[in-house]
Image (cartoon, rainbow, N blue to C red; front, side, top):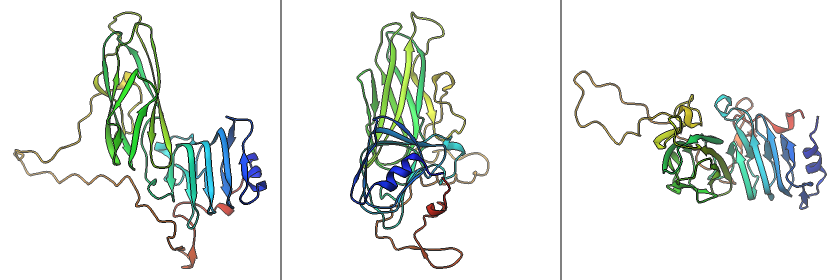
Length: 295
């Protein structure tokens, strides 16, 4: 069954603009864009439990004012299933104000496996005192981090890519005050968001949380919960070998961390060879042929 959005895309002529009305609506994927056009979302959200969600097979495609979201648990998805956007060989996609939840394939400088919480619950905070929390995130590409309000600050504000510790500073707040902020992760072409929520206690209580540098999320721990109630200290990244050798035989060196990013593939990359036939093909490894998808 063809989705409503797929019908609208197929009915839009080459070089034309599809405006999604009414604004801020929610639409189901997956969809395929086979010709050059502009999709102006007006804040619309395209979502699906697994990917690839949006597949671009043409040059000259512009995505504007959209949210693209994989709603399934990323820890249980394969690379292909966690892919929210794929641009095939020879295709070109441009973006303006596009927010993602998921991974990207085929866009130079944006590929890699992300691991970050979609929301953080601070819990009930002690009032009238500073709080410091940490997040350990896997950000595979260079990006900047910002917060949409002055109550919460983040540092550092820029990263070169890789597993990174992020520090959140929460200013002293009056009793019974709410914290609702958005941490924005911005790469070259896309944005990603982490919601931050909490409340201060009505008074000083034994159950109120004090932020003393504990981790709210650790991308290296698959069981970590993005909430302060289960936050626990984790070991800091190793800064080098120990200065004193162990008494017994030295253990084998730890395996090097897996590369979180895939080297960008330029738009003019030659077509790949099919594993079975040996003939050239534009298929991206791990992504099924879009023409065979059933809607």
